[in-house]
Length: 225
Image 1 (cartoon, rainbow, N blue to C red):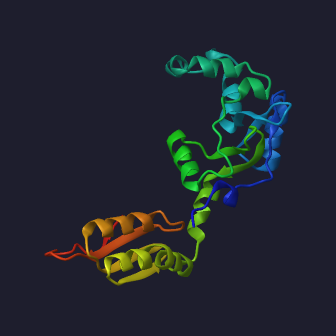
Image 2 (image 1 turned 90 degrees about the vertical axis):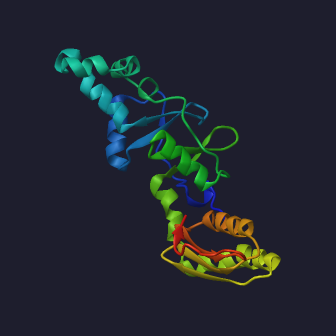
């Protein structure tokens, strides 16, 4: 079972139009208790994202650079200086917006968040219209999956089939999302393939590889991937 964005996203999204004022955005951030929201055009398509950091840029710099230490002033990027003079969501937003689709994998969304160092991503349909939002908390929700359910999938979808091909039996235990694989296989390649597949099962935190193969003189027990 591989979770997709649609499984964990929030469908009720706080968004603003590109013409929303600074005052309106500040109020909505506070009232909705969110740290950012998508900016949409008149057709409901996502064109950017406004965050607390974007609003803070204006708050800090609106009074002019004379209030800022010289070294900090010199480090300000031209784009940030331009934002400081902005009055609307269209002026202050970060664009183009990085988005995901409902059918994208949660792993893909997580990688984007990690790479871009963002806390949430707008979710859009094929037409670019806003249908939801996915946050870091939503991504981490896949690890709430019960150990028994994870073990069942490991056995049904991976180890039973693969061990039959290798004519060996494997023991599978799961505790706190950590899967331990024990037993013997015909080849090391088959074992590596099994570990790889198990590692990508939804809810798996890590895999302890305690598998053995013919010809192995020793096995490093407890290797974690």
